[in-house]
Length: 383
Ligand SMILES: [Zn+2]
Ligand SMILES: [Zn+2]
Image 1 (cartoon, rainbow, N blue to C red):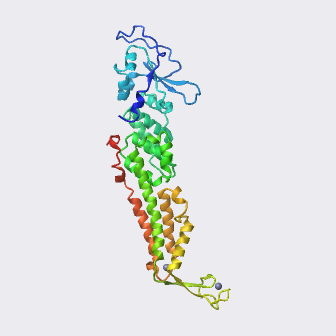
Image 2 (cartoon, protein in one colour; image 1 turned 120 degrees about the vertical axis):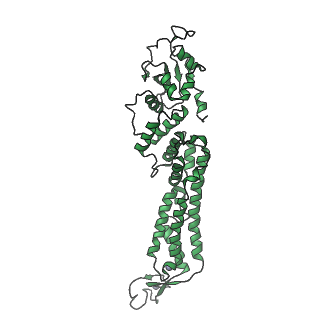
Image 3 (cartoon, rainbow, N blue to C red; image 1 turned 180 degrees about the vertical axis):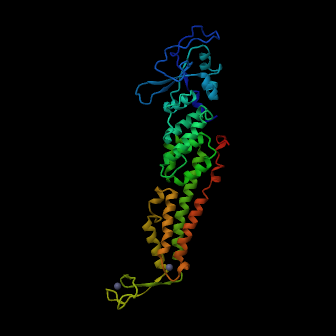
């Protein structure tokens, strides 16, 4: 049973709805349906039950009603089949021709409108253009009433028409809603989607997911797996950036920087062909040839971090996705082409910047599907 199954039992049949069967409850003969359907949407004009949903736009207890066919719904969904079986009050009343009004006030009427219309072949006005929230809500109700198979073609259409698997530039909530829909519809691609989602989520996503009424339905194992990977990834990049600084601080060989001079007194740099005409700085001191040294490399490295906004104490690690951080890292490593010294590819700064990009790319590659195949998704995912 799914989490939502407990909700199913909370529905009840309104005592003041439906007419008493002319033939009485003791006979098996079905009574004529009542013509009074109280403004219900007639999904089946000959329907034998009414579903009532709370109208979210109404301050009062106004409901939205649908006249439905218990037979059609029973064919589409084992949950409805059970609801309309003789073992349940609803089923008995349908058999007695009472046309019961079944209160489903916890359900989202918009999602149920779509589902019920499709199940009753009244889908002319159903759009393929859904928001992620609408798609997720349909998925949740599809799972609740176990009618995923009956909706299969539509689900494929929605998924592909809306490119729901593209996570780029989505908010953490939108990513969560997409994963939830994939989970509720039991997509076999769920592990791949989870891996992709983890790359696009912001570090504070978990709190937003937990507070979100719908997204919080995602299994804890999946949420924890995504969160753990993301936190590990961010820690890794931050640690790597700090490690580079430590490595550059180690005393190393100095290399001449060609066509570059500096004034050791005031720090002024000269970078043109023949150097200052008289090898004198404007402060009057003699300039000397410039060297790439331990100190200058650390200085250059920290400047590069600041330039791309990724100094390890900066805010980005608290606000950016791991993919966005990786883009900054690529920018960092690109700076190695601007550093010229006679050490060339042996210069410690060049070596570190080159390796950094490769290592972060490799780390992202480790964010693979297998990571999410064994996180207790259980029987929800089928092949
Ligand atoms: Zn000077
Ligand atoms: Zn160098």
